[in-house]
Amino acid sequence: MERIEHRVSFDGWQDVFQHESKVLGCMMRFGVYLPPQVAYKRLPVLYWLSGLTCTEQNFITKAAVQRYAAEHGLIIVAPDTSPRGEEVADNEAYDLGQGAGFYVDATKIPWSNHYRMYTYVVEELPALIEENFSASQRRGISGHSMGGHGALVIALRNPGRYQSVSAFSPIVAPTQVPWGQKALAAYLGENQDTWKEYDAVELIRTAQERLPLLVDQGLSDEFLDNQLRPELLRSICREVGHPLTLNLRLGYDHSYYFISTYINEHIVHHAAALNR
Amino acid sequence: MERIEHRVSFDGWQDVFQHESKVLGCMMRFGVYLPPQVAYKRLPVLYWLSGLTCTEQNFITKAAVQRYAAEHGLIIVAPDTSPRGEEVADNEAYDLGQGAGFYVDATKIPWSNHYRMYTYVVEELPALIEENFSASQRRGISGHSMGGHGALVIALRNPGRYQSVSAFSPIVAPTQVPWGQKALAAYLGENQDTWKEYDAVELIRTAQERLPLLVDQGLSDEFLDNQLRPELLRSICREVGHPLTLNLRLGYDHSYYFISTYINEHIVHHAAALNR
Figure (tube, rainbow over the protein chains, first blue to last red):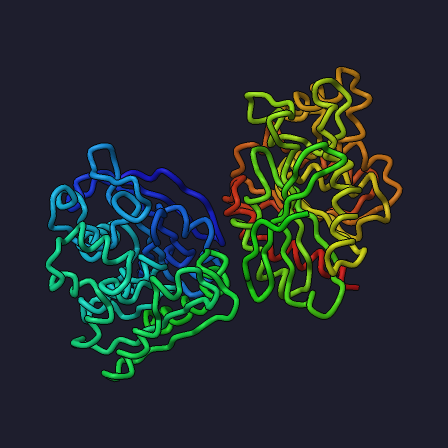
């Protein structure tokens, strides 16, 4: 593991590391914000999963999260959104291949050689973080768009592993929308039964744990109607009694200007669960 | 004037406009944050001047200023750092030509055809803002590095026009450091008497108005010793009795991680003067 960026922010450190991922079979980068409190105690970790086309940079440079992470004593880890490199399969489209890992373990050639972001985020990355930083084993997970999908799916499939979850503008039902259908068909094949393991709305039907969901969604989001469909999340949560706070925000779009406006509320939500 | 970006942020609008600048003879872009209070009153304007290589995007995406501008009711205007376009003179170096206007009115060919950022920032841009937005004629000015130099020079040369000024990591004495000497020689020619009009330390000697300066400087800034030299600012301010708050910040570098950590304090400084 090599540190490639190291910058003070709100009296903590905003670092970027790269490491050879065994799960993904390539070099990977992640951002990690270490608040000042790491000097004297182990701290909970909030994992942030970014959306399509992003790298580890988008969240750490644009979300303005460091102030709140420092206030509440949370480590923030923001990985890249897919395996990377010349030997890693790719596609010209922005919504498939590099930058579009969708947080799944691919089973179809050529993707299955490297695209195992689900296992990377659930297992390899936390093990690395908890071994190398002053991190406790209390974990939260959040993300944006494709990464909001990843956060919801990962929390729902791993009861007990995360103490808090939230999402901005998540793809809540990838099996029902174009982005998800394209990616899941490529990475998992045409058998749609396999897709359901990566669909938050499907997973909520049978969830063993009723971890409360906090979701923020902008009402001027250009992807609201055809890709995000928060009404499907609201509907299933009501049906099965899964706790959901769904904040619909007038005027806000899909950008980091939306995330930076409400990231404080998400940090408060995670800190309330993680600092218990 | 055409609006090319329009995004809600902290219940206000983060917009980007482009317009045909008469002073610069090219199309120019600027970011403008309009806080919610523009709905019912005219507001003061804080002009932000960015540093070398920046466009209008850096400050609006990375500084996390919108929360504080919304809290205090300030409009924030962030122009590009030089004239732009294929017909505009340029240089391969990052510190001369496009992205490196140094906020001067160039007098030497080929630069003098377009490089008049001083007059653009002092006259054309405020006239445009005050005509087209719900802006009062109360003005503050701030900036980073080359833009910190621009902010100090512009405030010092225009007594009464700005009610507040601050800077992050400014080039306080361009006539004495490599970045400044290179740019001023190119834009103004070899007669160093003409350079003094663009040197904050020189201008403070003879300032007609003792507008208090707020300056933040990171002590791990890679340009501290050879380009920024805040001790020259401290020295001249002590000598002539010019009010200066110089905050030296342990561990911080030259990046936007530094700016975003302390931008709140600068907004409070400007708001105290501008909202009077």
